[in-house]
Image (tube, rainbow, N blue to C red; front, side, top):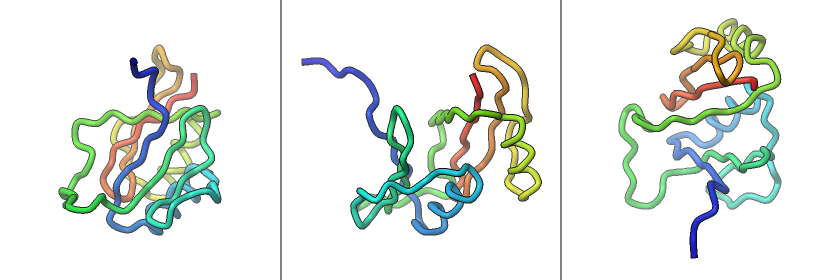
Length: 119
């Protein structure tokens, strides 16, 4: 038996509602009503994305996700960048054009660095 690919991605966060609200407000993600009580799952495709309370025994460091590369696809990366910047969201890497289209990175509410691309 072999693994066929990634099917679900969840970020462990200290403040579940704050993190969920951030992704709803700034990225336009919509909650999927089918979620366990310790998580907020968003209706993303083709891979489900969620924020969740830390697993038992997990103590999140100051900057969780160090060394993890999380990329999300958007319809218009430049517009999303401009909206996030105007809202005061920290931009880690400014927009640039590359093999994945317009690309930039920002820091989410728990310190995770997320890259947005539009191709």
